[in-house]
Each structure stands twice: as structure tokens, then as C-alpha cells.
Amino acid sequence: MNYLFPVFLKLEHLNTLVVGGGNVGEEKLSAILRNSPKAKVTVVATYFKEEVVELAKKHTTVTLEERSFEYDDLEGKQVVILATDNRALHEEIKAETSQRGILTNVADTPDLCDFYLGSVVQKGDLKIGISTNGKSPTLAKRIREYLEEALPDEIQELMDGLTAFRNQLKGDFAVKVKELNALTQKVMKSKKVQ
Ligand SMILES: C[C@@]1(CC(=O)O)C2=NC(=C\c3[nH]c(c(CCC(=O)O)c3CC(=O)O)Cc3[nH]c(c(CC(=O)O)c3CCC(=O)O)/C=C3\N/C(=C\2)[C@@H](CCC(=O)O)[C@]3(C)CC(=O)O)/[C@H]1CCC(=O)O
Ligand SMILES: NC(=O)c1ccc[n+]([C@@H]2O[C@H](COP(=O)([O-])OP(=O)(O)OC[C@H]3O[C@@H](n4cnc5c(N)ncnc54)[C@H](O)[C@@H]3O)[C@@H](O)[C@H]2O)c1
Image (cartoon, rainbow, N blue to C red; front, top):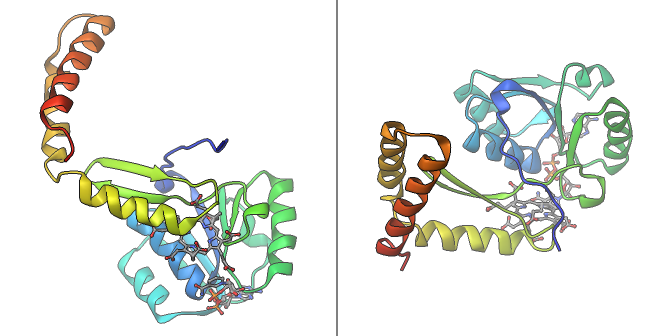
């Protein structure tokens, strides 16, 4: 059983700290920005990979601080991702973020994580998050690739059409739900994924 509770965060409303600007830091920062290009992110690291510097240039809401982590970096942060090569440092920071109630992901260390990053399928407004409960990130990646291939690009038109239909529906909530259910059932039958 997977007891993780999935949510879709509005990272532009929150302050995120990434500690580490190497390979893993880059992976996590690009995962954030691929999903939330306007996310407010501070990255603190003693050195930055070129790709991280390039990402920060493209996203004005990303700030890079080239120095060692300091506890003051946690001030005002709601989300923290630890991606250095120093496990002892991760454990120390995690103890402090737990005290302060800051949601923390420790890359590649499931035991220390409050949340995991998921594999993400994106087709326009449709977003599907995939979790294997930490069992196999590689399988999550393969399922993402499978769904990306299987879902038709026209799914955006379908969503736009449904929004328009939803907006012009009259009647109370129960009537709208009934009509939307009836229509989407028909659509799913006719557009059945191959
Ligand atoms: C989904 C994705 C999101 C992202 O990171 O953006 C993600 N890992 C991705 C890829 C990936 N990561 C690793 C490989 C190498 C092969 C392999 O090990 O499978 C590959 C595959 C590749 O890169 O091809 C190494 C790895 N990862 C973790 C461990 C530790 C452990 O398992 O104990 C180790 C071993 C490290 C070592 O050997 O030392 C742990 C976690 N990785 C998670 C997320 C969380 C669980 C998600 C879930 O429930 O599925 C969790 C628990 C915590 C977290 O990091 O949030 C992203 C796919 C993006 C995509 O392409 O769609
Ligand atoms: N590279 C991978 O894909 C991969 C895969 C599996 C596991 N790992 C493990 O993940 C860890 C990180 O790997 P990596 O390749 O990203 O390492 P890396 O050397 O590329 O990056 C480490 C980053 O941590 C920063 N850092 C270290 N101490 C710091 C401190 N006190 N304050 C601020 N920043 C600090 C460095 O400046 C650097 O930006 C390693 O332990 C590695 O074994 C990496």
C-alpha cells in the first residue's frame, strides 16, 4: 500500500530552498522549474554546476547564493530540498526543519523525507503525478514515458471544450455534475486511449 497523500503545490506562492548545486541539485531544480517556472527558489551551494547557473538566468524568481549553508537560510522557507553530498549535514538540517515545521525532501534518502518528488506526465493542462512509494523511481519514469506516449495531444482541446461547456451550464450544482458526468462518459468512450 502507498499511504502518501498527493497534492499539487503552487510554488509561486511559497518560498523554496534547495541546498546543493551539483548533479542532484540540478535535477531537483529542473524538476521544480519544469513544473512551476515561476517558483520562488533560493539555491545555496559552495559551487554551482554550469547548468544550474543557466537555469537561474532563465528564471528570474531563482536566486543563487554561492556559499556554505547557514541556518538563517531556513528563515521564511516552507519547502526545503537537500541535495548536497554530505549526509551528516542533511541529517542536521532535517532535524532543524522538523523543529520548524518546514516540509523537507532529502534527495535519495527516503527515510529522511517528508515528501517525495514524483514522476510527472504533462499534456497541456493535464498533469499526472506518479509515485511508486519509493520502490522504483526507474519504474515511475517508465510509466511516465508510457503515459506520455499513450495520451493523445488533443486532450487539451477536450479539456478546453469541457471548460466551455461547464461555464455555459445552467442549473444547480447537482444538475451540472450530472450533465458533466454524462458528457465525459460519452467522450471517454469515443476517444478511448489506444
Ligand atoms: C520520480 C523522480 C522525481 C525527481 O527526482 O525529479 C524521483 N527519482 C527519479 C529518478 C531516479 N532517481 C534515481 C534513479 C536511478 C535508478 C533507481 O534507483 O531507480 C532514477 C532514474 C533515472 O534517473 O533514470 C536514484 C534514486 N532515487 C531515490 C533513491 C534512494 C532510494 O531509493 O533509496 C535512489 C538511489 C540512489 C543511489 O543509488 O544511491 C529516491 C527517490 N527518488 C524519487 C523520485 C522519490 C521516489 C519516487 C517514487 O516513489 O517513485 C525518492 C524516494 C525521494 C526523492 O528523491 O524525492 C525521478 C524520475 C523522473 C522522471 O524521469 O520521470
Ligand atoms: N549524481 C547522481 O546522479 C547521483 C546518483 C545517486 C546518488 N548520488 C549521491 O547524491 C549526492 C550528491 O551527488 P551530486 O552528484 O549532486 O554531488 P555534487 O558534488 O555534484 O554536488 C554536491 C553539491 O553540494 C554542495 N555542498 C556540499 N556541502 C555544502 C554545504 N555545506 N553548503 C552548501 N552546499 C554544499 C556543493 O557545493 C555541490 O553543489 C552524493 O552523495 C552522491 O553519492 C548522486
